Image (cartoon, rainbow, N blue to C red; front, side, top):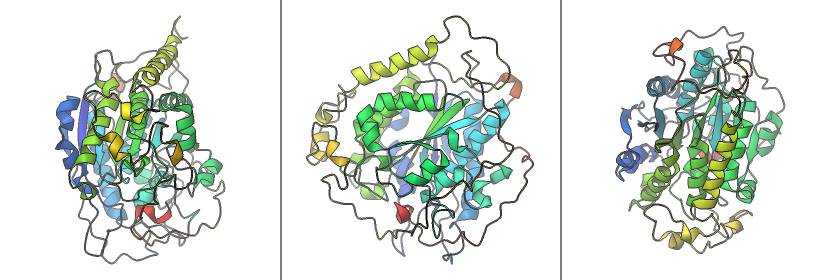
Length: 464
């Protein structure tokens, strides 16, 4: 049976700095802009409503105060986790419309609660043009949560964000796969030192989007399931400039569609969030329309009649796999192969995308990026004028972070790879509301802010 999608709006700007001294970021308008292009009816999705964020007001925040809006982001993350939990409790597939990348904290908290409930770990597929890995261990200051979200959800940074409910980290480093960062991302060496698996744009394009999705599945084979984070700045600014920190060298819409379809075409994918689209840079709505076309096509495997219900792997002892059970992986591989072969005729001809309904005019928007799959974008600049980053300030990096951020105790044991199909959603024995707030587990340290957690510029692109 098909998996029903539930769309939840998370229109927060709290993780970004103001574009000017008298304005606020436009990402809060993204859910409405996408809905205006019939996203919900085209997905045949249930409207799960909106989690209204606190007021955006940097106030008297100053460098040295830590992450701006930290208290508001923490409160919002708790509320968002509750709502995501209620969607998963219903056996539905949540699609969260951000908002900036700080929405990941709420999703991460919901996933950690779920992992605790089923006795296992939930992984993260992080699709983003930037690593968002700035933290006090590798930068002289912090300030904008949207540029630090991956660091925070892996347990780095101030405890009022990185350890909500005493949970730290929400995702272990070995359970994170990063896709789509630029080849020269400032924190790529830090990710490598932490053991976080990455596939930057050149490798993603070389392997193909469908094979990259399958590779991501395999990296998280020991997890009970995984969450997908998508920041639309993974797209090249030639085709998607309506973001707060455009950066040349990204992927094309066709590649994102194939990647998304491959990532969700498995019962282990528990939900998706979409972030950082800014309608203020899309006056005629053409980019919103393109995002909606991509999301609808990319999520088609979720709503297909033959879609497999979500399946969480349990840490409890399981019987030996049934004869023929390994076909599960073969089936999935075959599905990805069909995607690679059949969807859009490959990415090498961007003017022949072939998506349902077609997207006329894409070739014109590519500004001369033609039938080589944007290969020219892989190098610095890639033939595209460098994007203006709205006065972004780059932090000095004192060096590559070492293993100081050790994984804390209390993390669930590695799960066995199981092939048994389980009921939709969490085990029935868990009862309703299993993702609701629970008493925090014992914690050895409060992890309070250190003097090194100084903040400065509020923009995500501080270190992009």
